[in-house]
Image (cartoon, rainbow, N blue to C red; front, top):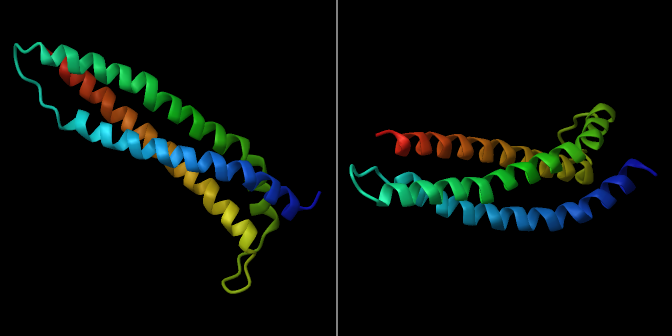
Length: 132
C-alpha cells in the first residue's frame, strides 16, 4: 500500500472523529467558561453544589476528551512520523494530501494540549472552592 492510499484510508475515519470532537469541544468550552467565572461565596451552600458539578464535569467531559484526543494522536503517530521522514519541504510543490493529514494530526495535538490546560484550570478551581 502506498503512502497516499494509506493516508486516504486514514483520513476517512479521521474526518468523522474530527466532526464529533469539534462539536463536543465547543460544548465543553461554553460550560467551562461558566464554571471558571464562578466566585466563592463564604458560608454559601452553592459552593458545595458548584464543587460537585465541577468534579462531575471534569470526570465526565474533560477527561474522556483528553483520552480521545490522545488516542487519535497516538494512533496516527507512526504514519505521521513516516510522512515527516519521507517528505521534503517545498513551498510551491507540496503534496496536498500529506499536508492536510499533517494539519489534522496537529489539530488533534492542539486539542489534546488545550484539554490538558482546561483540566488543570478546573483542578485549580476545585482546590480554590475546597479551601475554607
